[in-house]
Image 1 (cartoon, rainbow, N blue to C red):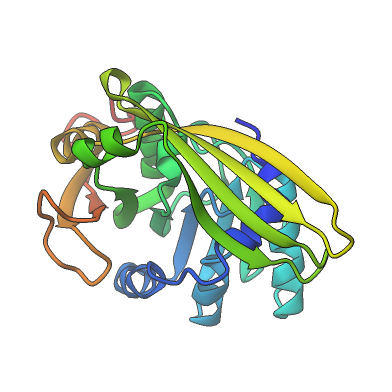
Image 2 (cartoon, rainbow, N blue to C red):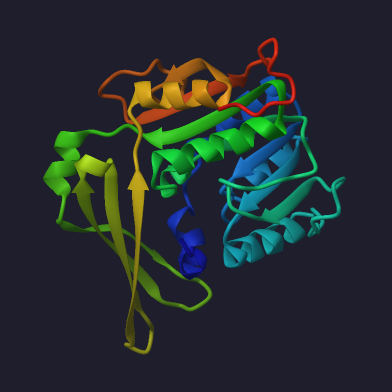
Length: 273
């Protein structure tokens, strides 16, 4: 999917969101100081990690999102690294999380937050993303995955309903941005089809609308644990919120912290199935 059209709204969408950062920092400190974010967007979580002393790699498919991240990093004193500059505090890489190859193969900590893994919309491709992360982590390295916990009754109840999800003032354009959302549930495929309509009301009275759509494939807890095991991980923790609360069926989040297992005897050099 092409996320470039989201770039000019992305910073507004996430302007106040910090909920996941304390848990990401805590896990990074426990794992080590070399971290990889899958689907890093505009660098919202990369910057706190770099400020905390981590060496961070941010990976995303969107050139437009990475361009914003690069500008933010430069403003904070972090070099606008090239792919060849592997000693920079933060390095940005444009790549697909299901089929990337980095020179670094001893990363301490990988993470994917804000439902980003759900943008990979089949189970087979989600497994490929986990396997890619596995290949780049050291033995014992940690993987954090943050997803919403599917409440099917709620998802069915809101399916097809339009709601005003958010609004903000865009300092650059001067427009007020209204964010409308409509979601459709496809329970058979574990998909929530999401449509955002960004309505911009400019000071001169102009009104523009941008319609952007994407699907999200959600996990069930047992499915997630099985996919992680198949990719070569052992689940250390399953949280229901960023405060480390144990997962419950009515939890808002579904957060896995998994550890890369040593290769089984006779499996040296082989990738996980």
